[in-house]
Image 1 (cartoon, helix red, strand yellow):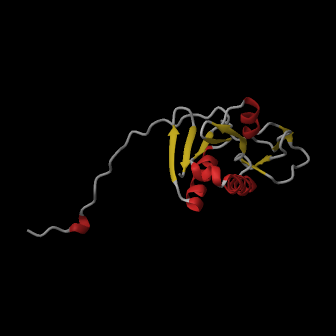
Image 2: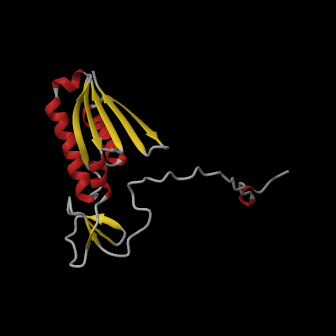
Image 3: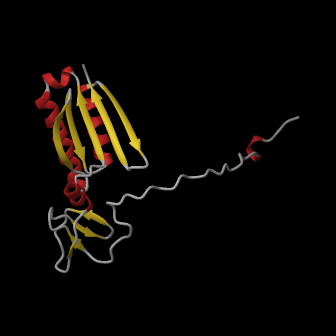
Length: 165
């Protein structure tokens, strides 16, 4: 018996989607007016934060990145470890800053909050999880090593660990 495969269609599989966790630092709705951050100068227009010059009637409103910096609540952690870090610290930190500069030019909410010394390495905290993952991937691509990325869905938090011995 011959079957016509073209007539067969796989059934739709319904999935229960987990509810999206709300990030308390992101706006819950779009503003209906232009805004400018009084701290960093980023402007909010047409539903997104940009580095465009503010319009004359822009209202002052602190951007989510400045709120995170003020509260000390990072959205991403990148931990750098290993003997390679000790030998090439300047190059590695230069790449970290270059990643931030490149991303921040297009996405004002992606910033480095702090770079601190931790036991056995360096920790970079960021205002956005995408930047944390991007820094880790850039280091892995440029200097090799291993990269582990964990996303804590309940906390809207990304932890990346890059290391090379």
